[in-house]
Image (cartoon, rainbow, N blue to C red):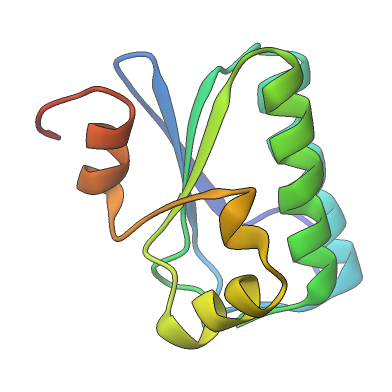
Length: 123
């Protein structure tokens, strides 16, 4: 099994958009590979504005939520912002139950995330 993270990283202005390409983020190795890539964006590339697009994701392991929490901490440490967008209703419920909606930032879609970051319109 390949541990290459299946994510698409795009830059728009000073915003980095990460598009998850997998429907299932369940395997430990897969999540570790994605974590490494996301942490690299913040730790090494000093990305301050990050949008994580979960539009294609249907299943998410709890380990992936841990990665998001770590990413949030790392980003906050460099005065950055991470916005999670396009999350399915059933996945959003998990974040609500865990009370993570008070900690993490969410948007309905990429355009709304860009507005939260101070941009009037996307693309």
